Length: 593
Image (cartoon, rainbow, N blue to C red; front, side, top):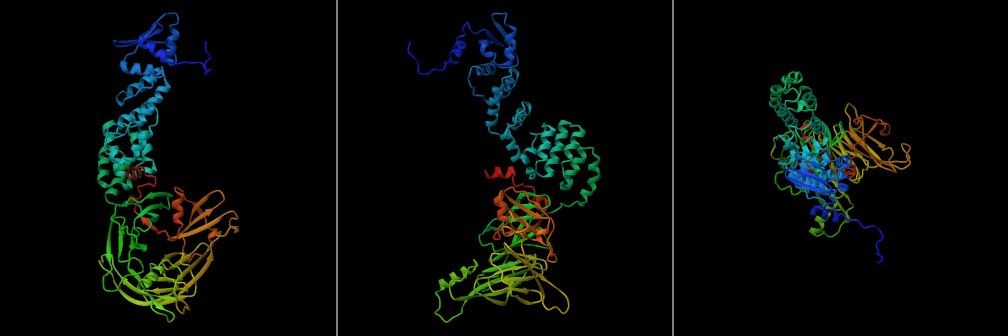
């Protein structure tokens, strides 16, 4: 006999399967289903604990047999031949029966195969109920089904697919913060239908009703609930809701806008420490010439977007927007613009010569104008003259009439912002200029600020801050004043490595509205925090002594954008109904895909 190269023992189930096919006499255990019967090897069947127990009881007999009722012959043969190493191709129609047989015969590998097939079935509204029942009955998690339910929960709750689901499953969905996009009306209407179909016990209904925020329920839906449920809590609150004495509570949020767009795309709920996607369905101008974004102090649910030729007013509570146009009256194109809810400042830049030299070509003069917009040194021995125009408008205005007021000179460009008191700040390379659009007073402050600094308009002044220093400019009132503004500067603590606040950390700050944010960089991690107190220009405490709370870091790249002074960020009051779309909203992800 020749010596084989393979020294491991050779074993194959092919011969055993051939013996079963030929019904050889060595097959000593008979399985019968109706009129179908077949013999198998008891030595193979003992891999099933169910068959092993039977076979051990038949040791004294030459041949053993069993009859299985309630199953089809095809499914039984599929399950048994699985013990012979054959992996079946399971169809969706026979999956439930094979699941049950795998449990009955106690074959865990076969059950695992059924789970894999169940996870690979494309989920739709027609087979969703069956797949949910499978995962509940046989105690496994079907991730594709869970993802489908979360992505399309609004449509699913409006159908009867989840009517027979367990209370625990419904409670898990209702407490999931990422599923806030489903309205409270839809949730309560589902519970009403569920109680009518299933006759759920009152205690079970009360448990689920506690998860419904009645302040977000419409009066019509609440009346339906009162007819369906006999619950004292609903009876007590219903008259107040019908009288609309429970308005939706708005939330203070940090709103981050898309680059070069007027569309908000991320919101941070300050009080609840939660991030949301912007769920506003608005016709917004997404042009790349967005120059300035502001909010309405008297109507916090509104914000405005300044474009070079118009202003867009966005109303979040009504999910609407409209444009106010600048008249085409020969003023030409504007290089800078800022506005609040009543007043608009615009600038037009021109080049003036400082020394006697021949005129520049027109294209070169235009290049210089554009150069100034990026706050860099001008490449020529020239000054820029900015002609300042001021205009007013109202909530119902269609056009803005502007008038020329004065002009400014600067050799490095200009930045300008306006606050609630209609005071506009002009930042040049040489100094800071303040103009009051109501009293027509002009003040010059001999303080230099960087064009890279963050400028925050406040009610009675401004805060200008960079990485290391902050400048506070506050309007003061009273008789016999030497100056109309109080100036205070202070260093931002921890902006240099080795500062006493924390020698192992570097701190970056940003003021958004009246809320200070802090980015703490350590050797091991980035920590993002918000101040627990709101800032005021009258407030003189040291930032290093403030209390800070850690912000939920859902996306560090997003939080880093928040600390970029080039990023458009506002502190606004957002209606609660606009805060449904969680940042990890599965419905949004499904729509993107």
